[in-house]
Image (tube, rainbow, N blue to C red):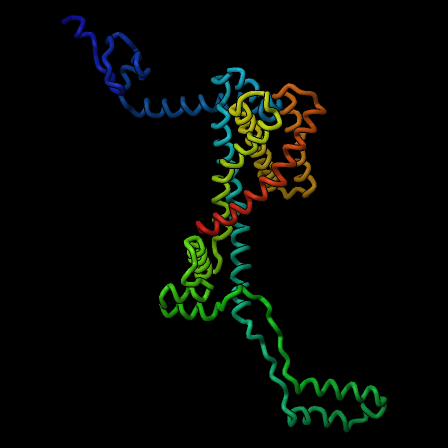
Length: 357
């Protein structure tokens, strides 16, 4: 009985252990961990500074020792530094938070441009300038012809002046060639009169035999028209973080192809996480500096180009190859990624952002 009296259940995992233990031997929670304000904030602050300490230990090598973190993580140093996926998520969140301020300006400008396009398209009947009738024209030109002003004019000058007067009797028209490919005025009329959706979609071009994806496309087109294009750039922006989770493994796959015998796919994925984290930090620096001071474009491009130099050094350090081989393979990896992967991904992102708009 005395032994049983010294045991107590853990509040977290409910396993029994000796009352003299300070921590639960099964789950690690503190034995006497009554929830107070002090305990609540202590856990929060200690967890934050634990993350912060590992982040600082990882951030400096990430920026100034290309390939070092990935190499150390693969070798087994996995608690001393911040996990590559965790670092990537944290830095990407910071970047997209900063970029959201810039995207608001872009989004506003694009919304205004598209709205202006709708207004121009709906005025495609053109602006007709009313001509002067012959009586009004005579009342203006006859006094002019009777003055001594025309006595010194040659026959050619008088003929040109008469042709100018004659042009005022013709209708002048300013054509507007802006066209969305469907009758926007008719569609607005149907929407205003609460016409059935099928009639509205028919104006856009949907037919009875249109397939599933085609119908989805036309429905999004109708939504695009009702919103006058507002928010389309924001929809594209929202698709970028999701797309990057696909683009990053593809980058790792290309590395695997070029460095087939240099480790498992997970090793290349670790390298990709750290390299993309560096890219996000570089873009954060560009955004942050431009918020304070509008630096020249050539400086921005120099920073962007420096990321390739970083990639060459990182590949050299991580895969333990010479600078020349690292430079050639870095160039080929970048060429394949930017020439094929990014354009295809961009088209997919545009399609998805429109379908999910």
